[in-house]
Length: 325
Image 1: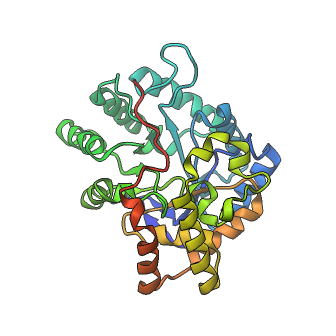
Image 2 (image 1 turned 120 degrees about the horizontal axis):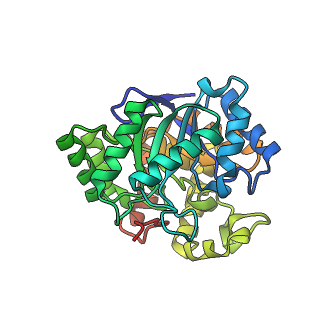
């Protein structure tokens, strides 16, 4: 396994990370634990979850799985900020929500700290100073080691960094955007900012919901796929992205690898990317994804992938989780 610094921080993370939004949902607890153990055994140390994943079950399963001494083997990241219910104060990134939810997450995760605590999306109704000062207090208290953001636009991230500098608060060290060959929109503004400011990028949807595995070629809907289980996913499965998946599959066959490994490896070769989080609903998927960390792509291959995906720099984003009102 290859390892990188998380941005300009001192934290070292595996090039391939494990996303766990399937834990307690598409993967039952027994399967989830096997997935987690498989990942750790093969050198994956970055484990990403959130307080809202599968109605808190993801955090709870991870906590039970790591309780036997494996906690120190991993870099544990969770999030706060998405709606948790219909009542007032059930979501957002107010001081109240952050202080309440970090304790709830720590209880479920059966640990006294998280390595990376991330704001899941911008809360427009809460002053950014309030959010950042609450996060800074958590670092001071030892409940959080580093802080990060998710789903921020470039100007929003820059505003947060400026406030942290002005108020002498801990600053974000990472950001999670949607990023893949099928969605390169962050390269216009967000990625250059991250490179300039030393912010590590942690892509989510790196395989565009399976499009970049080639399994949706010719309009086929595989049994058990995201298309079958999540009808809204069809909105993202346009002809241009299916054609991209076919092109990546063709190049992967030429190179003797898989479309998934090739797509993930392309992200790992981006200088802005610290770790790529990939979910799994079966342990064998972890082994398949591990191939990406071993691929060394030539300049010619990178150029061909860039060419195939060039239209997606300015296309409609693949996924958008925008600020809470």
